[in-house]
Length: 194
Image (cartoon, rainbow, N blue to C red; front, top):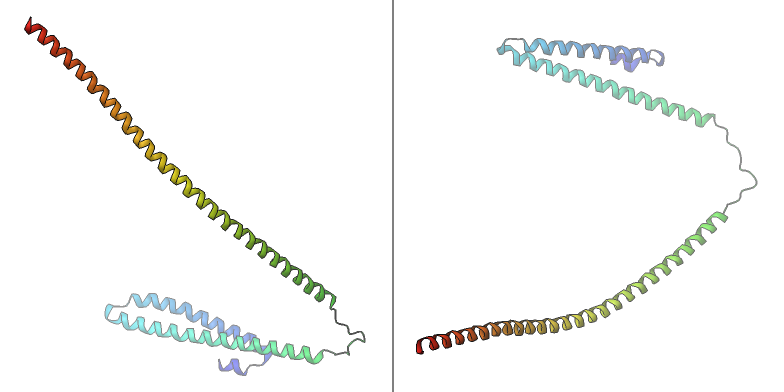
């Protein structure tokens, strides 16, 4: 990493590639070490695993440091390119015809004004429709109340009519039963008395 800081621009990519290759090689060796540490005797296994994890942690820090250095280098190179662009650009004076196009802005403003009035008209129309619906609701409520009153009256009349029909039906059975009973009594009296 020290060589990376002091390397010139031509050899910088070679040093970065060399460091990345070394880090990749260390990662592959750490994977082998991890497999070998699991084959250690149980009393040494924990210590070996701890050392392998520490090495992994250190290598990850090296990888992060390399990425940070690359990021700083890319940012520095981009700043240098932008600086060179600014310094190499030639500036000219403005044209003599400096006009501000306002026609589109005026049309846009008038369109917005028309839309605003249109929305006000829509809101007013919606308000009048809502008032009409409220008036219809009150009318329908009154009509519904009258219909319910008539239905209740008819319902009462129907109940009374059903009771009268039921009573007439029962009275007919009493009359037929009474006539049969009278006939049987007259027949029995005629039988026993004669």
